[in-house]
Image (tube, rainbow over all chains, first blue to last red; front, side, top):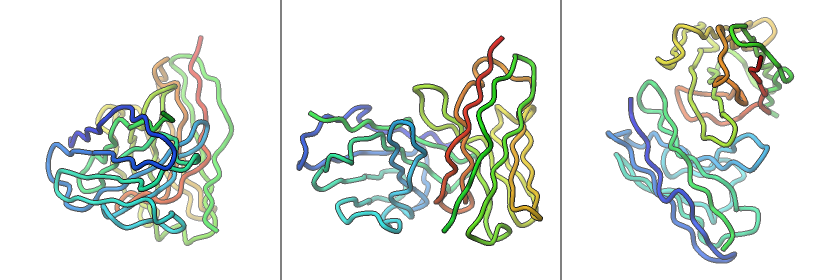
Length: 107
Length: 117
């Protein structure tokens, strides 16, 4: 099973600042990597798929990069609605797996 | 628009079974698969398994293999997830989501299953 490790566990950022979230796979997942945002009491929402393609309706301040085993989600200028938990997810190998999440909180 | 509407919350005793439904609309059901994901209170997302909307092929998480069954009813565009021999650590919100071969894109609203004596 591919283990997805996200860092940091918690990221404290001021509104308007840049946030950089990392996700590492225990073996290559090519570009078959997605990022999800989850707010309390809500289902996750797809942000990025194919490691770098924004899903429909996702603002341009969200960007994804990487391939193989190292991936990054960048939020260029944090808005109040961006404070949430973010998960990476590999869909290259069975079983599919998720990272443990990074909580982005207000500094 | 794509929608996945799940059945309501359940309270079950240890050892019982639960069956959660997920009714899809807004797309051709047989053209996509359904993935089931659960989330224990305060915890992260756990992939449970996948079922093809086209032919019913499945792939389950090894830890649940012996207790979970995923099915579909293409006549009603509904997916089902049954979990047997429930334990307290099965208490979680259960989500169905569209996709799984490729990225999961749309999610249901979630179904809270509470296992308590």
